[in-house]
Length: 455
Image (cartoon, rainbow, N blue to C red):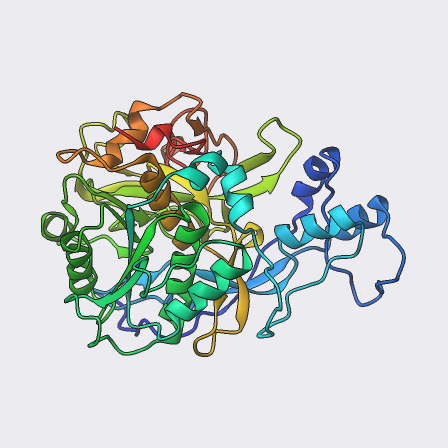
C-alpha cells in the first residue's frame, strides 16, 4: 500500500516464499488427480511412473518462491504500486496437477530461467473454475475491456500474440482492430517511457482478459507515471475511447484526497470499473476503496473432488502477504452495501484467483523480468478477470454503477461463496476472515457464470 516513504515505484521487491502446499494434496488425491511437489536433490526423476504414494510424500516439501514485480515496491505519497507477484522458483499448483495426471515427478520453476511452456493456469482452467466456458466461447464480441497501467510495454502486442497463439485463441492485433495501445492522452505514437516491471503487469492484465473473454477487444492505456493523477487520467481516457469495462491492477494507501479522486477519475455511470484489493494482507487501499469501483479480492484456487471441480479459500501467505480487505477510512458506503460492521465503504465486493502458488500463466518478454512464460499471482490477476466477466455479461445500463450487480445476486448460485481462510487480524471478524455470505477478503465470492455481473 502507499505510504509516505519516498521510494520509487521501480525498485525490485525482495524474494518471497509461499508455505507448504500440503493442504491441497488430500482433496486432489481424492479427485483422482493427485498433487505433486518438486523432487528434492535426493529424489531423482526416473523413466518409471511415480507412485501416488511417492507424490504425496513429496508434497510436504512443495513451495514456490516469488517476488514482487518491479512495479510493486512501496511507492511514495501520491503514487501507486502494481499488485503483481511473479513466481521465480518451486512448483505451482498447475505443475503439480499436470504431473499427477501423468504420474511423473513434476518439474520446477527455476529462478530467472525461461520456461518453454506455461507453468500456471491457462484459459481453460479459469473458464472451468468460474463456470465461463460457454460464455467465453459465445459472448464478448464487440465489447472492449480496457487495461490501465503505468509506463510502456514495447512488447505488449507481440507477447499477447504469443499467449493467444499458444492457447489457440483468435488473433488480437492492431491490424484487425482487436487490440489498441495508447497513452493517457490517447496518442498511439507518443507513448510513456518503457518499464520492465510494469511491462510484466501489463502482460498479466492482457493475458487475463484474453483467458476470460477471448472474443473481447482490448484497449491498453498507459499512464506516463504511476502517480494517482496520471493513472486516474488514463482511466478517464479509457472511458472516453468507449471502454465499458476498465481494470486497474494497482493501489496504495488511502488518503483524504480519495473522495476527490472518486469524482475526478472513477465515477463513470454505465462503466464497470474494477480495482485490485491489494497484496499486503488485511488493510484497505485505494482505488479499491472507491465506492464507484468493484473491489476485487484474491483467493487460492485448487482442483477438488466437488461437483464444481475446484475449491477456493482466502489467499494469505503471511501477515503481510495476502489479499487486501478492510473498512475505508474516507469513502462513503454505497447504498447497495448493507454490512453493518463498517459505516463506510467496505472492501472487497467479489474475488478471483490471486495466490501465486495457484497462479496464472503469463507470457512476457520485455526487460529483466521478461523471461518468457511465467506464473503470476496477486490481486493484479483477479481484477482483469472480473472486468472480463462483466464484459461476458454484456454492456451495463447507462445509468448504472455495476459494482452493485453482485449484491443483487448475493447468496445465489451465481457466486461461489468462499467460506474458509483469513488475511490477517482484525477486531471485526468478517473484515479479515471468510464466512458464509459476505466477508471482506472475498466479498460475496467468485463468479459462477455471468449472472451476478449484469443488471
